[in-house]
Length: 207
Ligand code: MD6
Ligand code: FE
Image 1 (cartoon, rainbow, N blue to C red):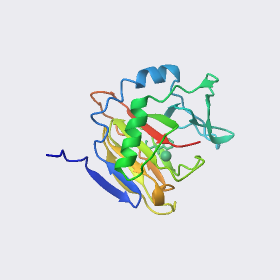
Image 2: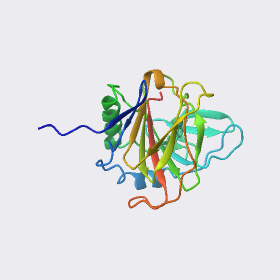
Image 3: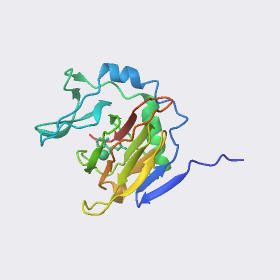
């Protein structure tokens, strides 16, 4: 008998929510050493605002923001050294989630690590700093639940709201690749593995 696959929920053409896809994968063991090598920090936007989400990266490229703009960088601006390598287990998890959502051959070279504390939020935005939009975005939710906002490619369209739990994975690509998305202010709580925070891993083919 074949085990049932993970629950799939279509959010839009090209966008899929894979409920619990990462729940049984050990992604947390690698987290502390990565954050020791490249600590979480609050980036400043080109407009001069300090983001409430704290960020770091692993992989060949990392996403950074400062007064000069958003971009991908080979080096961590804090240390001047390359970002820590992406753990093979993380890369394989992202590739298998992408394949499950219909995107074969996903080879992420960037993983953004985001930490949300109670009250942290991420305004509606598009992920458009990557060089090639033919690859999807794979987003892994860990820790406290969050309300994920997912709209269309038009900023003015009101986004749908989805509650994302520990282990949920969202994949968006194809016609949804440039969909506006964000995260509502995180509600306080206590997660058995991660405490009072949410960690989100966002995998991209950036270079
Ligand atoms: C999420 N995160 O946290 C979705 N995008 O569920 C994002 O969309 C995102 O956290 C760009 C930069 C950082 C992010
Ligand atoms: Fe994003």
